[in-house]
Image (tube, rainbow, N blue to C red; front, side):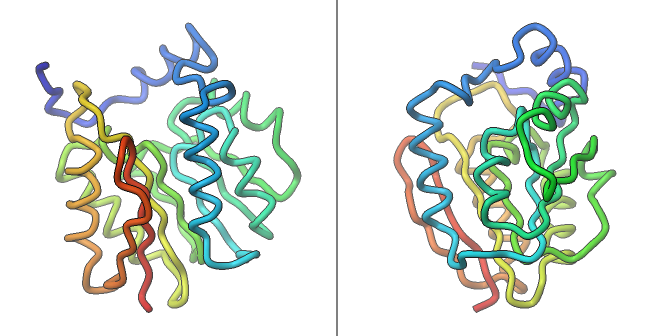
Length: 192
């Protein structure tokens, strides 16, 4: 399989969602349900003041995370996906169209979730996203990553994306807990 070299453009995702509002079966897949349960179990607190979900898609995980966040900012590069997410989520969630790394949101977050997004970036862009995460994470905050480990034509594999994120953030987020490493990798990063 030939890998793409560049970060996937916003048009890739917009076209996917316009042709099928749930192209990865987030609403119906047992794999996704299992991954969502594991992601919620990985959180160390019952409540977070300010959460950020990067790549919120149609809002399935967003809805679950919103129950654990006083305020949650959910971002995606696809306006079509954001409209779908907005229609199923509550008032404590703000949605914003953003294309990373350029549009990384300002603010401080005590929870950042990047689920199934980092392998869409080329290395230099992923490094910029990782640096933005460490600039915006609260001192006692945590970052949760979850990525499928199978083969794709994306610029990076799930494992490569995870390792590169860990390398860039190691000085600020030295504690790394790999919680699941079969089919998908789920891990949590924190300062302590």
